[in-house]
Figure 1: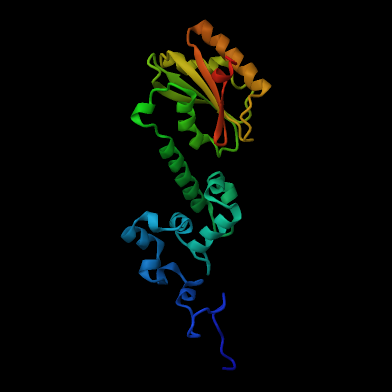
Figure 2 (figure 1 turned 90 degrees about the vertical axis):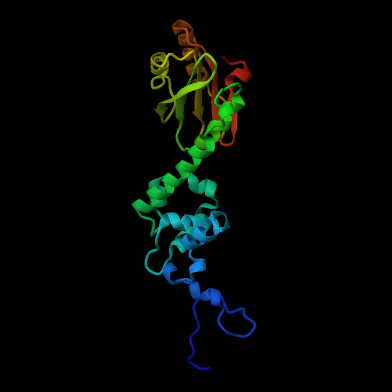
Length: 251
């Protein structure tokens, strides 16, 4: 009929010529959706595994803005950043670049991804003893692979190669002026560590040790001989791969 207006959005594909009911959710508030379609209620009644990535992300976002729902914002984030892995590496400031994602929502998203990384990196009981470079990589790759700055960590071990503690020495560009042996061994001495493992990441994705990496490692190894705390390995995490100085014969 002349003058009849249709809902904005994709053309109706229903056989009877009426409006597809799914279109009724387009740009309506989530609280007005059928209960079984709302992300929070769906999670409570059916469990989290039935929700899409956008729906799970929408729960973190909480609410939309204007005519844009939390699900719309979540889908936009996933489209703009291709996948969850890329999204997990964003900072609070980068998330706020999308209109509708304020500081509080961005902080919630960053915190959720950090919790996921920490949960994934928790060792099984039998993996608390570090026997091989794989043990270290399996624990720390999930935590370090998405970081955009270098982080230098020292793992303190007891005489049974069980990890006592991890200590972050520096954040930012790795260099000899910042990563001094005294900073590396200070906690090791306080904690009575029997040995240590050095660990840092390469945000570039290249796991090859740089000249600076090799130089710093030699200084720390020599200092370890003096204080009686040997360096078992220096492991570089780069994306999903790693490089072990011990395996390469560089210690």
